[in-house]
Structure formats: C-alpha cells, structure tokens
Length: 257
Image (cartoon, rainbow, N blue to C red; front, top):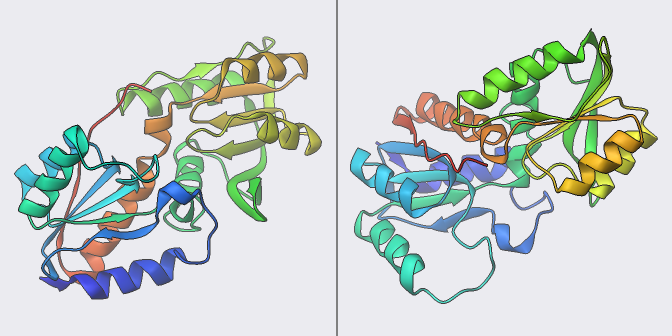
C-alpha cells in the first residue's frame, strides 16, 4: 500500500507536470483523487469507459493514462461521461493523466521507448512545440523496408496496422525523426525537411501529409496513434510498482487507430 499523495508528488516532479506546455484540455496531473491510498496502478492509453471498466474489474485504485478525462475541454457530466465518472468514484479510483510530459520524458517517454523498440538511437530532438522537443531524431543506416517491417510487427502487437508511404526499391533510412500520436502535420513535415530527414515515424496524420511527403522525397511510417502511445504508460506504471511496492497492470483497450 502506498500514499496517493506521495505517488502524485513523485509523478509531478519526474514528469515536470507543471512545467511542460500542453493543450489546455490535457489537464495533466491528478484529475480525480481517491481516499488516499494505492495498492494497484492500472496503465492505459485512454481514460475510456472500456478502460475504466477493465480497471475496476482488476481492482485498480490508480488509473494512469496518457489521454485524460477532459480532453475535449469543459463538458457536461451526462451520458457516457457520467457513467465513466460515476464508476471511477464508486470504485475509489484515482486518475492521473500525462500527455506531452510523458511523450518527451527521457526515460519513460513514448518517443524514446518507441525508438528503442524499432532499433533506433535518438541523438536529438524533433517536433518542436512552444520551445520544447516533443519527439526525437537521429541517424541510422538501414533499409527503409526493414524499418517498415519492424514498424508493422510493433503495431500488430497492439491490434494496429502500420502504413508506409511509397519509397523507391533499395532506399535506406539515414536521417529520421519521430513523434508519437498525431505526429504528422504540416509543421512537423516542414521541420523534417528543414532538418534534411529522409524518414518520419509517427502515430497518425491526415491524408495531405502523405501527399506532401511524397512530393518532397520524405517517407512517412504511420504506426497507429494508440500503438505509439502504449509504451510510456506501461513503463511508468512499472516504475511506480517498483518504487512504491504496489501492483501494476496494463489495461489494453485498442482503438484500431
């Protein structure tokens, strides 16, 4: 058994929750408190009704998520929002959310861990947002087809399907950039081209990014939003279990995206 306040203090400090910029709706940090103790942390990508129900069945009393309860901003607690909130409170379940702070963390961040999964070594930042690098970048020398195949295998682990824009036979990835989640945008593509990258690895992006990439000789691998943002919460949940002597479980609730 651990103190909720001690866990929150640790998370806020390690993730720099109050320092790292983010979208207002992310509302990083403790979103719902419980009666004050934690025995079992559940790690999930989204604070969805499905994830909350699965966590309740496991006896989770702290749900650690990447996308929190209030992503769309202020909303009425009715319908599905009411059902989810009621279950959280009835089960005495605290909810802690970390979005951009978890994406960019040097040890438990989605991008650092994803790079490791794909056999890539980050040496720099990427995907600048309000003066901070959300993603990572680096150099490599491997066939782009091999990197694509690694991405396909990783995505499949989380019920996803990686998609890669067309590239010439025999192409090699030498300079790459990565941004988990909705990492493909006109801004990140411009940044990639300014940096001379040949390969961009993201969770998802709009159709026009594939067109823009092909026109500029850039290959994009879309691994799926959900898949690219599983690693951080899992790693952080495991760290809480180790540090505070509590149980940790991964709550799988893939979206197919």
